[in-house]
Length: 86
Image 1: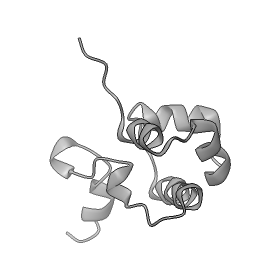
Image 2 (image 1 turned 180 degrees about the vertical axis):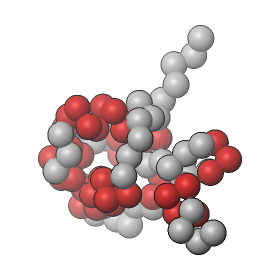
Image 3 (image 1 turned 120 degrees about the vertical axis):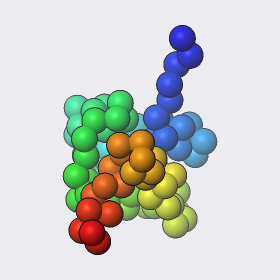
Image 4 (image 1 turned 135 degrees about the vertical axis):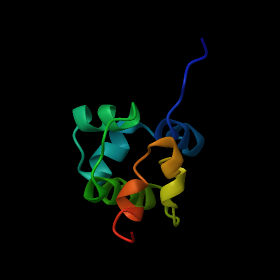
């Protein structure tokens, strides 16, 4: 069975960053970040904190879709964005 890599983990590897740096920049504790990287439920406010941390560390405009799969058909966190519009 192949190892599944989360989008956050793939992003960190691509950018040459560590999870610890992103945790510090986004003020997210290790336990929560581990849960998020493994696909656990995440609140929009936490997503935005991590997104801001990623932008600070990279010095560029990181898109939310670089960190999470936002396809609602896959049962992802995108329902946070689409449910308010319905």
